[in-house]
Image 1 (cartoon, helix red, strand yellow):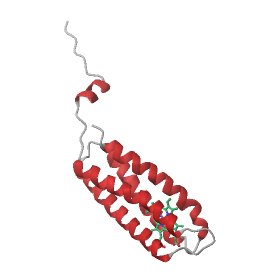
Image 2 (cartoon, protein in one colour):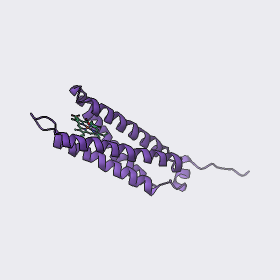
Image 3 (cartoon, helix red, strand yellow):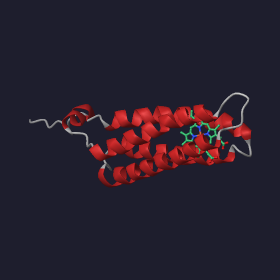
Image 4 (cartoon, protein in one colour):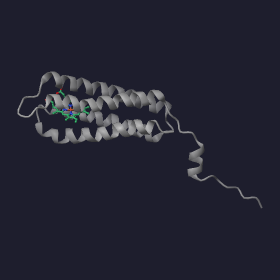
Amino acid sequence: MTQTSTPSPAASDARTPRVRSRLFSVLVGLSTLVVLLQGLWAGLFVQEGQDYKDGWVEVHARGADVAIALALVAVVLALVKLRSRRDLVIGSIVFLVLLVLEAYLGGLIGDRAGLTAVHFPLAMLLMGLAVWLPLRASRR
Ligand code: HEM
C-alpha cells in the first residue's frame, strides 16, 4: 500500500519563497528614519526651563506628516502586492494607526501637557515597530 504524505508546515514554508517588495522596504525604511528624527527634533525644542522653540515644533509637525504619508503608501502597497505577507500587512497597518494616534496626541499637548506621558512612551513603541518592520520586510 502506498502512503501519501502531506508536507509539514515547516517544510512547505521553507520551499515557498516569501514575497518581498523593494519599494515597500524603501518606504518603510524612510518612514523609520523620519520617526527616529522626530526624537532629534523633540530634543531640540524641549529644553529644561524654557518654552518650546516654535521652529523645531513646526519641523516636528511636518516630520509627522511625512512619516504618515510614507506609511500610508506602504500600507497600500502591502495590501496590493504583499497580501500573502500577513506580517507586513498587519505590521504596516498598526504602524500607520499608531503614527496617526501619535500625531493627534502631539497636537493636543499644547493644551494638555499631561499628554506627554502618553506621547513619549508611544514614540518609543513606534521606534521599536519602525525598526522591526524593515527588518521583517527584508526577510525572505
Ligand atoms: C522621542 C520621540 C518624541 C518626543 C520626545 C516628542 C515630543 C513632543 C512634544 C513635547 C510635543 C509638544 C510640542 C507642542 O505642541 O508644544 C510634541 C508634539 C507633536 N508630536 Fe511629538 N514627540 C516624539 C515623537 C513623535 C513622533 C514619532 C511623531 C509622529 C507622528 C510625533 C508627532 C507630533 C506632532 C504632530 C506634534 C504636534 C506639533 C504641533 O503642535 O504642531 N511626535 N511632540
